[in-house]
Image (cartoon, rainbow, N blue to C red; front, top):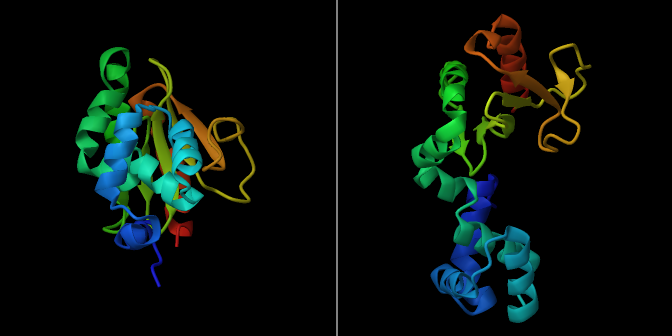
Length: 190
């Protein structure tokens, strides 16, 4: 039985023609012709107009919009470059410092670029790096049970996939305290 999200998606893709009558490529073509650019709108279209189950509609929407980890990884460097283009270019050194530190935790760290952030995963996601404004990068960390501090705030409405957020505005903000929290999140992601 598939375990990881990637293995589950691969199993769904392998069974797609049998379950839906069309291959992933055929569904992507239909989805692109529909012209929907928002994930939720595309999912609703596939479910309503084509009778797809939510799981398959969600997968096709992600693949069509290239918003899933697998699709994002194919052009991951392009996505990171886009995130730090223009007004947010000054935040790229903070991202570089964080990504280097994350990769040093172990060979099992995977950085998966999405459209607006980069996910750090081990067996599960333990952090995200997101350039939120032109002057601030937000580091989301999963530290269940950890109380907030003056720097480590609860994530609130920032992102429901992490428990805490740290606001970073300079490379020097990525200090021993931040790296300690990141490593705790990494260690817990098993």
